[in-house]
Image (cartoon, rainbow, N blue to C red; front, top):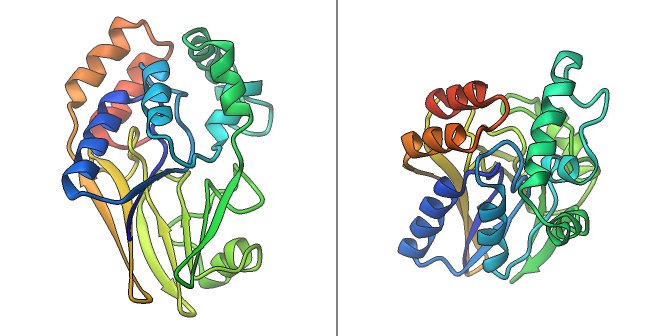
Length: 239
């Protein structure tokens, strides 16, 4: 079984299309989506439609929650709050009520057993959509945030837009990065692959080129609020 895990699309349907094409090319068996589908990109509606067309399991991210109820004080820097809610309002204006309801009703976790391998998927941490666990987190922090919250052999999350794979106490922790807004300095979409075969697990991070200039053009065409900052992120893969 070879599974793809994608997340943090952030309304970048062009990057999502490139990733889905790569998944088809690799003939992967299944795709799972770990949240942050629409917010902060030029094509929220098309991104959501592409995700829903996969007919697969999807969980909620913090940006999906923001689309549903807005960005609240304490969740972002105070100076960014008004601007981010302006972006949220623009995003909601591109969607229908049925889309908002879909995002609202998404589950927060995905846990299952595949041939004896327990896999736990969540957007940020098992109990939170917002907690940041960076790539350089200590072993103790990984144990606290992940292992103590849910028992599994493979832990897969997103949220930080910086992919990595670590091994600790016989367990695998994988951050799959971001499809639409990578923050690690490499302006390519990121996603993860997990292969389970004969009781063994292998993991990898895939990077996929997408048409960044077309995405930049779209931000301007749709008059996206805060377009220039988001364009800078697309170009440089840094926030």
